[in-house]
Structure formats: structure tokens, C-alpha cells
Image (cartoon, rainbow, N blue to C red):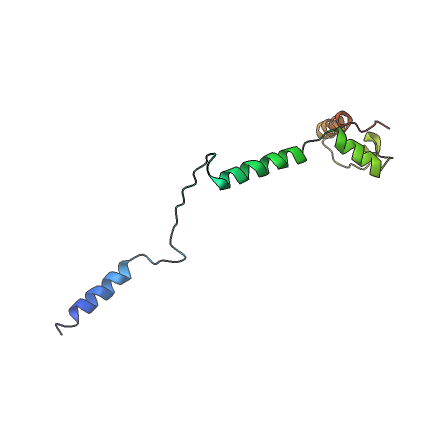
Length: 102
């Protein structure tokens, strides 16, 4: 029986150890600076997305080239929302982008 004692101690100790896998936690360190290629890629991508999502006259020109009948009034006639403040702000944005009133 003396030979089983170390085995039993090892099994008992293994039962008290935290399980790896699904319960394991990983901590990662991300260094955000100009020498990190991942950080540079994020910066380039976010700048490209900001430029692509910026309303400008070119966007209005392209829209009017495809749909010449587009106007602020025609767009407002398709909106069924109740928030008049938001609708007014969006109509003003269309006007500032170069979409005609009628």
C-alpha cells in the first residue's frame, strides 16, 4: 500500500488544478505605435473608411447621374418616420451635399 500513496496524492492534486481549454484565460498585449504593422493597417483602413463615408459633391453628382429625378422632396415623400427633427436634419444634409430641392 505504500506504493499507492504517491499516486493517490498526484491524482488528488490533479483534481484541484484548474482545467485548461474552455476555462483558460489568455491575456494579449497590443502595442499601438507607428512601428507595429497591425496598428498601421488599422490606421490606413480607418482613414479610408472615413473618406469613403464622407458626404461630398462627388456623391451627389454620381447619384444624380444615375437617378436624375432625385430631389430632397422626392426623398422626403418616401420617409414614414415620426421624428421630424431627424428628418429635417437629414434633408439639410442632402441639400448641403448638392441634392436639389425639387
